[in-house]
Image 1 (tube, rainbow, N blue to C red):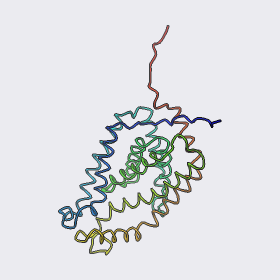
Image 2: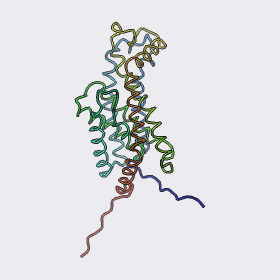
Image 3: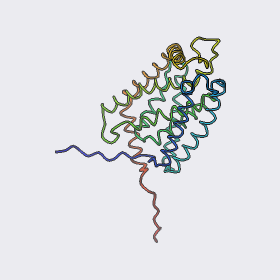
Image 4: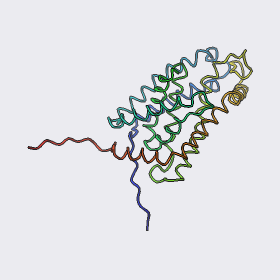
Length: 277
């Protein structure tokens, strides 16, 4: 006798070919924007504009993230999904300032993990980006780093939606999977954000700053030293809070999100009946 069959998990957004292509494009540009110090050889002309490159990529990423959001919206982000997006983005933006400036205690990350898991990668990318944008406006954190934060949080939340067995895995095993993902992704988020700010450092001020004249291995060693010296404790705090909140609050939050998703019936077309009488 087999166990009860689980219904296929509803998705607020089903990614189509255009949406996938837009996501791949913005991700490719994002990889170049974050990793150009290691992708460009020492004699490349881009290194001569090390202080300007982050601004260039920041401006480009704003446009591309907007394009991705618009493309995903065209592929099925209906009114009910928009309402869900607004509620979760507002909640995430409100959670972020709670631990701001305190050893990386950022509770919004656990909400992003659980939301991406339930609502899927397409919705997750839009939610992560919009939440970070709203949070930046709320806290006054608008600057050249904001587009990189939006893209990184979009990746972070989308990754949760790509985790395996969304329709079958439940209970403690699912919480452990989400906690493990949140732990690793919290460090990954901090690392890529370090890349966005590392090149702004003046090489004369520190021997762990980016040196446009140095070789890739030398700059890699500088970057690792920079991460250890500046953000390891912060990233560890973020990872620990994400794990603790996921294990402690994951079950009721996942149930609430799944219940709201079922009631919203995102994939059920809206029909209108003629009035009788």
